[in-house]
Every structure is written in structure tokens, then in C-alpha cells.
Image (cartoon, rainbow, N blue to C red; front, side):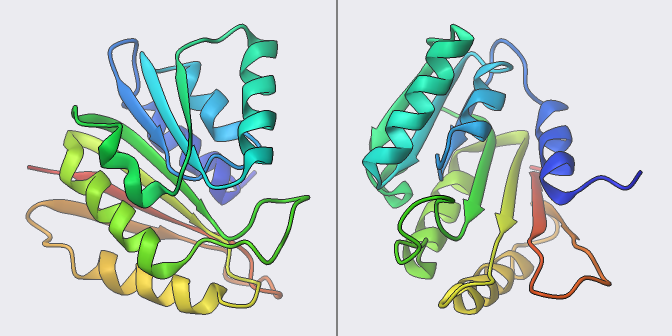
Length: 182
């Protein structure tokens, strides 16, 4: 069976994660990606602007008995205030927090700042996964801004790929993958 973009995203990141890796979940949400990263990395820094995200993620990590994640109630554009060491893997899920206030969405200006900061910290061979959900007001603007930014990355420094459904209606989410080459 063909993998859904989020499953491919996890496979892509799992290939580079190990017990020495530092990882970032730039959009904590309900904590699924933070948990995934914490099960594989030495330390995870996770970011979100909503208290509900921290609560759900903290609960999810506690249920799994994991203590190697640092949860930050702040926007991902501030990640370099908490993360200064090289990052092996990072993930973004753009859009809004499911089962929460759908008017609170990721914004292109802060997302691009955060992506650039992640890329600056990404170690050689490190990977960035960006799930783009854009079926909401403002989603197209962020989608276009992220794709434009990623397409302009120098090919000698970064490998980039796009993985998306071709025959689905209703703006299905898709995956952008980036790997630092040098």
C-alpha cells in the first residue's frame, strides 16, 4: 500500500535518528511527532503557541514514560533561543491544531524564519520534514511561501523532494523533505 505523507515523513526522519541525535518538533500540536522523535532521539525540543498543545504532548510523553523532550510555549521562530547545537532531524506540521481553535494557524512569516533557523542548525546528513496542510483560510499563502523558499535552496547544499497525492480533491496535505548535503 502507498504510504501516506505523514508516514513517509516519519520513515524519512527515522533513518537518521539515533540515541545521540537532537531533534526539533517545530509545531507540537497533539504531540504525535514529539512522541515519535522522543522515542528515537537523545533530546527533542518541541514548540507551540497553544497551552493545549503542551498539555496534550506532556500527557502523551508521560504515558510513554519519556522524559527527553523539552516543551516550549512559544512560536517556532524562537527555536534558536533554546536550540544551539546541531540538529539531526526536524518536523513541521503546518496549518492548525486539530480539535482546537482553527483560527490559530501557522503563519508564513514565522514559519519561514523557523525553517531558515532549522536549516542553519541542521547537521550534514540531517533532515527536515514539512507537512503542509493548506485547506484553510491563509493556508495557500503559507504553502506557496514555503515551496518558493525550498525551491530556492542551493542544490549543492540541500536535496529537496515533494511527495503529494495527485488524484485527491479537497486540498490534501503533502510532504516536503529536505536533507543537508554539506
